[in-house]
Length: 265
Length: 148
Image (cartoon, rainbow over all chains, first blue to last red; front, side, top):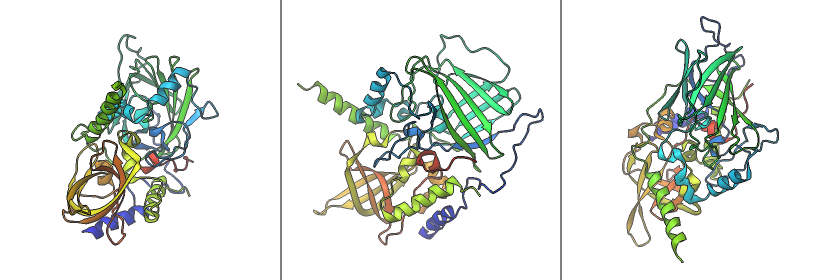
């Protein structure tokens, strides 16, 4: 029985893997009937540790290192306003881990939904692009040029509309609620956050993903992250995240203990 | 030829596990929350015990292990592993880890002091590694090459 486990592990190590192997000549970009790229399929972001922080950093025992995915500003550092930097630092305390919405199985927001370490699927029904995230959320993106929702409506995944610029799918997202974290370290956004995402076909198996975040509530200027998206030879699976979330209870214990300690004279 | 980032990550996991100095915990690769918040880097644990059950639940799978202390008292430890879907995609099935299997587990204990830990390395007594990693490694590993 155990030998099967090792056989699987060795097969994976040898490259017999669910992800599509990248050959010397990757397949060309597929096209829809209207000539637009057919980018439908299941993808995994090569996020380089982005879900644990967008800036470059070394690994610690319990947090993997990050290669840094911020491509603008060129120094790779987020142009964070002082208050947001202070809030970001405060969120790194263990007792703040409970406050990450994804710890509660809430949706991850934009752009984080792309680089949480779970796959997502792109569908292209007529007039739409639909993004299905394995962590049980979705975004439906109309391509008909419609206006965004009224500003008073605020959503975890925002309101997205899309269009093509050549072979690049551009998705503009507004109406975000400012409650999401950009990563587990507590990257800050506010309700002023707006995002422009670009899905740029590289070949038939790879996209380049770029997201420009404009949030004058937390940053001094717009900034952009970028990472590859790799097509997966896989289907989406169920993630009933609330089924047995023992972590959330532990995180709450830590938060409650910290609050109790703070109240003691 | 472009090296598959997936292959690279899996190889890194396996090699790293063999060296016991792997900077990447397989369980950390597919987290829905901060492991650093929940577990204590200053509380490493290493136990040997018998599996009582493995819970295939969301958002993470858990392996429960009976561990006998120096006084003979048995404590049932809970070790958190990767997400169920990542185990499944790596070829795991529920019946692969029957009760009674003896395991050696390295990890970090939960900050709340309970016999709960983040599993960093799981091996059999002969040193062979129990593979519990994630095929989505490049998403979090920070080592994958950029697309060509």
